[in-house]
Length: 128
Figure 1 (cartoon, rainbow, N blue to C red):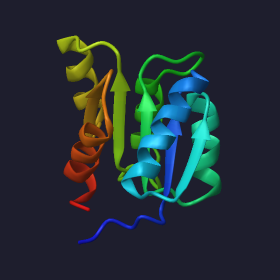
Figure 2: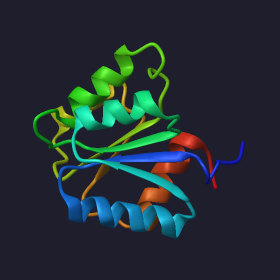
Figure 3: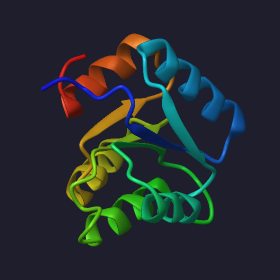
Figure 4: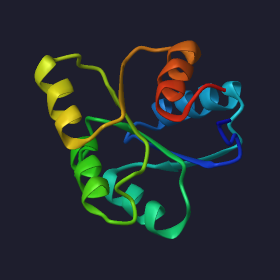
C-alpha cells in the first residue's frame, strides 16, 4: 500500500530547532502536511481535532514526556492504532524497552538524517 504523502504528520518536540529540522526532513521525503506541537498535551489536542496519519515525538519533553504521550494515545480507543515513532538522544536499553512496552511502532536515536527517517517511516507505514 502506498504511503499517503498528503496525510497529516504530527511532530512533537519542545525544542523549536528540532521541530524545524524534522519538518524539513519530512518535506525532503515528500510529506506535505506537517503539524507541530511543543509538548504532549498540545499533541493530544491536535490528535483530537484533526485526522493524523503519523506521530513523530521526542522522548524528553516537559511537562508531558513522549512516553506519557504514547501511553495516552494507546489508551484512547480512537487513537490507539496511530502509527507512533519516538525520537530520543539516548539509546538506553531501558528506554527502548519502555517505549516498546508502551506500544511504540519505531524508535530513532539522534542525530539522524533523511534516509534514517525514511527507513523508520517505511518500516511503520510501508515503503514510499
